[in-house]
Image: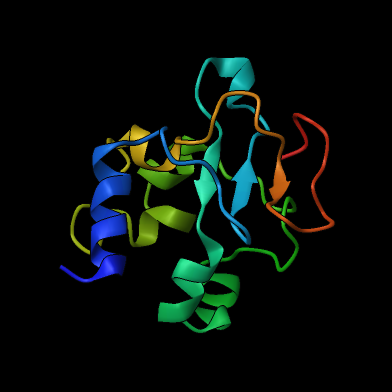
Length: 122
């Protein structure tokens, strides 16, 4: 098994054990307050596969991290992440632990970037 596939398999089997890596976006606007782990969005993992316009034009994401109001109800309704994470293209929203995988209390922001914010912003 190639290293990338092995790491992906490990991340899927052991959610919450791996922490956010450089360039990942941690979304923690409501997660901690609602007893859920913050979301880790692997931006570069998606960026390698898709052009920017796919998410930032066709799916409606604004170009600034933290500027989007994305609720789980939106994702379940097939908006934003739910356009692909629908159990057909990628796993569906019922697999909470895959996305909600950051260590509780992880501050929102871009890991390793200057845009890390205080808790609750994203």
